[in-house]
Amino acid sequence: MNMTSIGDLAQTLMLRSRSAELKQTVATLSNELSTGRVSDAASRVGNDFGYLSDIDRNLTRLEGFTVAASEARLFTDAAQVSLETIQNDASRLSSAMISVNPSTLSAVGQNLGTQARDTLGLTIGALNSSAGGRSLFAGVATDRAPLASVDTMMSELKTLVAGMTDAGDVRTAVDDWFSDPSGFKAVMYGGADDTLAPFQIGPGQEVGFSLKADDAEFRNIMSGMALAALAGDASLGFDTGLQAELFRHSAGSLTAGQDGLTAVRADLGFAEARIEDSIARNESARTGLEYARNALLEADPFETATRLEQAQFQLETLYTVTVRSSKLSLLNFMR
Image (cartoon, rainbow, N blue to C red; front, top):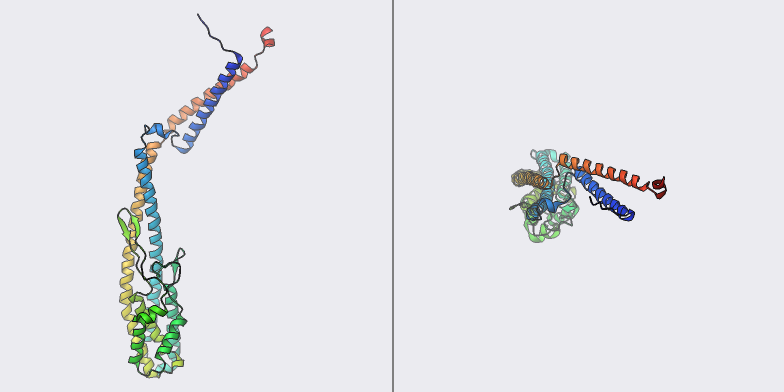
């Protein structure tokens, strides 16, 4: 029988090479066992990455939709809170003024005016609110608050109605100022005319957010509040009869404005529901795609553990052989 032998150096190199190979195998299998995924994706998919690439591409698209939907939810939720504040404040102010009469205004007229001015300030503040560092009601000009201060508004209106003695004239002057582009629009509104682009919240789905602080629904509410603030302003010198008429008109205006706010909030609520539905669908689709991806690249835990155990055993055996080989010497051989 022919026998082939190798020299000590060749044997050492062979052992080192085999040791490195087994170490790499153990490291690879350990990683697969801990992550649950195969290390050689190309081998698993037969070098055809088309299906895997399609899954990854769809996951990336879904991530973009999720970000947009989350931003849309942030905007609509914050806007709903602001509108709720405005509507509740307007309702309370209207209730406080609805039953005023000249005989009681000498005692409460100025307080009602102060309450109206404060409520107007809160309304302006609500319309100047932001979410995620972006103004809600400024159109595309999300980097700035859309409305000037309540002091700016009242200063303009007081100058406008100073000296008037007829309630109809005061009402007309205030209404015209809020509707005239050279009035409210020029003095108070600093936002953009263009509304935000719709949010792409899902495949073929978008939701718009077109509310701006200069919308008619908001101007009508602010007009009613401003009229009440003027009625109770002692510096204008209105008599109690004129004050009572202005307060009553203001209360009616605020009550009528509730319908507009309710409609706006209803539309906003519908958008919120669509956003939530889209987020749920996107999450479901993402879960399905991730499951498909994991199934494609999943490493069988039992098989991997078995192969790892075998590789570790082979490595330990190789170490044993290496140690024994290293103890051989000519002196030991001659003994």
